[in-house]
Length: 188
Image (cartoon, rainbow, N blue to C red):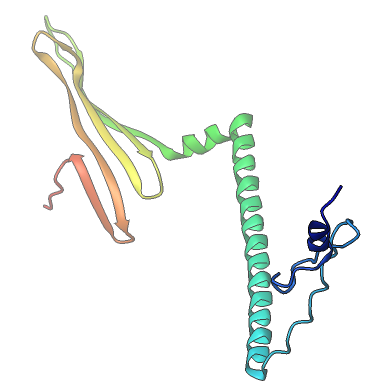
């Protein structure tokens, strides 16, 4: 049996609930939530500020969408360029580009002595110089000259020497910095 005071406490609605809190139902069913009240109208200054902020938000969203589209386009261009370069290297066409970067040259001096007698005629490759250059990039080049004298190096005869070996750095259109072993230019 239920005590009558306890039954009265269950049926009576509490008065200390915060506004908007659901009130207990006397029938024992779930309490119903109160319908939220309509927002209070904004003051004209607040309304103008809200409109300005909404416009600013829309502009920022548009700017973000444009930036994303530009980044995507730039990315797609880079991927296409790299893909084309990879295909070029795979097909062997890149080796022609590497050959364009290579420079070979040289010069020499040959002496011919036509002698009568015991020694007979002699040919002496007095000097043979091979030039090798390579363009590492548009701004960096390697230059080298190797000299061979008398066509051999043996028993103190002949000589093999690196005449020049240097890197040429272009730091501006009319300014170069050279680092390494080089021949100093001289005027007559």
